[in-house]
Amino acid sequence: MVKPHWDATTYEFASRRTIVFARRGMVATTQPLASQAGLEVLRRGGNAIDAVVAAAAVLAIVEPTSNGIGSDVFAIVWKDGKLHGLNASGHSPERLTFDELSRRGLRELPTHGWLPVTVPGAPAAWAALVQRFGRLPLKDVLAPAAALARDGFPVQPVTARNWRRAMEAHRDRLTDPVHEPFFRLFAPQGEAPGPGDLFRNPDAARTLEAIASSSGRAFYEGEIAEAIAAFARETGGLLSKADLAVYKPEWVDPLSVRYREFEVWELPPNGQGIVALMALGALDGMDLAAMDEAERAHAMLEAIKLAFEVALREVADPRFMRVAPASLVSKDHLEALRAKIGGEAHLPAVERPYYGGTVYLCAADGEGNMVSYIQSNYMGFGSGIVVPGTGISLQNRGHNFSMDPSHPNALGPRKRPYHTIIPGFLTRGGEPVGPFGVMGGFMQPQGHVQVLVQMLDLARNPQSALDAPRWQWLQGKRVLVEAALGEDVIAKLRARGHEVEVTDDGTPFGRGQIIWRLPNGALAGATEPRADGSIAAW
Image (cartoon, rainbow, N blue to C red):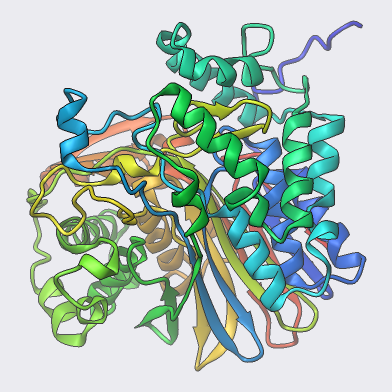
């Protein structure tokens, strides 16, 4: 076979995406095959909830660089005139304690291997969403993902780039037996697949079919649970069959703040959506539209840092928090944060943790149902552990625990860590406007704030809001910005004390999707230009 002489990862000229409009249904994801799978389920009689689960399961197969069957999930669902939240983040193993770390000669959790692995929530989330709100059997909803895993698919360009980078980063683990199944699956010829190369994961197809036929329980109590627990026992892991068996996702009530004429909704802790709410609540008392771009970016950066200072000190599994989450978005607290925003960059009293990888997707149908959904392995491929014979790559979410025993997010048994993945939802006067999100570790609340300011303050359409240059607070006074922000804005930010670093690589700035319902019921969709994003519309 003669390969093309062109490069699918190189684009010399500026391009443009436009808003996609539809009436009967829409699915927006980072992968064309996932969006099409969601649309296929809609056309076969499913609703938006069925569609988003179908797309999420496909993403677990076609974008393993960010998520998988062994991921965690958060979702916000608009159904029957109200919002419903699902927290499907997993808890730590019962044996994960500071004493266990000391016994192993460790002072902190490693980034990879078994110790940062928590119970994956994705299979339980798929089953819970479809059972409560879906219309089709789970078997039909997961069928597109199983078919792609079994028959194979061509790898998309941005995914191929991230795959290659991940394999290079994992090279020093090649000789570790616990990681051997990982390399055997994801680098079968010793290297990552390139753009357009075909990739298959037949073990994952069988796993998906077992999940579908058991409403997810095979993953937590059946043959898959036994395979996970057995590999952990053989290779030094703490995760047990009992840890898996007791896991249940949790339905929660979303939290909101008012921003301009809208209500912005996020899920409560252990997720970090409250960072976006605190920052937006602080900014709501400022006229951002009247500011020049540098002044506006400065105000937003300061609000984000102030919100992170609170969240990284207080957010944890809600059973262990010292403060009520609702108090963090109270009027008094938001006004106190706003009062701290000055004209110069301040040095926050917290360090910003590790950057991770995630997929965000959303769906809507012609009946009014809408879903904001996010699914993550945390650090790219996650822990670097693949359970032999299952095709499951396990996340490493536990690395986000604090090593300070007095911290509410301190490492501990059967505990959920501070979680970075956050779906967002927008309403106006109690009526649904639509789902939105920007994935990317600790970039996520920063992306939420920037995209919403673009739409709600500057009146830019959803696609322009996603296209706009972004920045990311890193730590201290360090800020990473896209070069497209412009030399003048960058110079003005530096003059205010921000330590600005500039890049042409869009990877660190997250990948978003937006669906906005118009007053006539039509759907307007936008997708991320920094990814292999695609909208399927009906």
